[in-house]
Image (cartoon, rainbow, N blue to C red):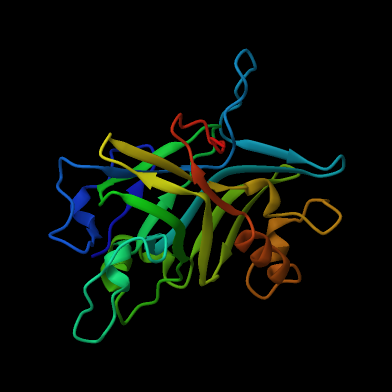
Length: 253
């Protein structure tokens, strides 16, 4: 199932996600995990809050980012190993009882500070210590056809960024296709008390940076260009995940 989730819109339906357990599965009225996305933490009380678009400068160049879209699939949150007994399926695989999964969808990333809720799904109580997802490059002629019917301009594109470089408009596109595994430290503990919140934090300010922290012209990082590899690595290294009950885009711990 393909689904587009716009972060400023309503929550995704719980039916878009498969939650698995060692019993009959969590009740829709039971405990839940709520996932948010953030690209900047909320400011401390009394400080002003900037809004999109966001601006970065290195003293010489000015980069303005006005929109970031990213295709994501295979979202999973995994239990602490050994924290539950899972019945094996006929293949001997019991991984599914430790995961909740969602298939390909499009994230329109929030650019204002603070966390924006994306999905809320019922899960079993327990401790979860790893969050996994895939930055996905859709391709026609296979499992991505339904997604591409809704988003035909993302054929072969996993991330698209719009903005300006020193006042000149640019579009950055990448075919990055990478699995991301992020440890949740401390583990996320889901109880009967209600929803447990965590945030996927994406540090956009590191994407278009060289090793000396100077800014990189995004157009020089498109497919086949000189800085393609640097920016791809920066993107892969820009993700964190942590508990965030107050939705401020910062780790509660």
